[in-house]
Length: 285
Image (cartoon, rainbow, N blue to C red):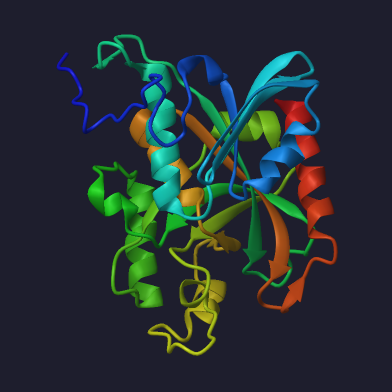
């Protein structure tokens, strides 16, 4: 195995990975990922104790124990570009020998659970409810730089979406972890989540800048192929699913529905919705 160069795998003077600023001992078998850095504290408030904290840019990490099980919770900030950094460095911590800079012969498979917020694309998806993302549809360009294998079903959906929504590019479609769904979300509805590369025009919002796809929200709402409908959208899930597949990990995105874009409604107490979801996930890890 060839060594990974110092400019491909950047390390800090203490040997920690560059952006996350973590060492291998800080990574538990199950990692909870959140977008908002303040949500890390919403998760760790339920820990029996917090044994380690790291604050580096938008990447906030708490390591502690919940019901005697070690849990790592990390924030990624917004967008799949940050998810790529998160997943690449997390994988390096467990599957690369940071001293020799060589990949380990025996690979470790992590369980990564995203607890995030999302907006509903279907009228019957209630504000304040939760769903697990069975499939993720990436409207971002991250996978243009990776050799992602899609199944025939996933590739078929990607081509169909591009054609019917009249996208100027082909999206990517990736299925989440079935084993994590059975463990964590067995009583939650499944959905198909659109991951957008922005919050405004890429999610059908218009302020002052003109949109190139003015009917995007309506097109996503009406799109279906058989019984495959798009249920919600946010800005990270497809990045989690794609990077997990590329690196051999399990990933599942669990979404608190804080808005219904079709009804133009927003949750009255969004923090309570997220907190209830966090408790549910922790109890089932």
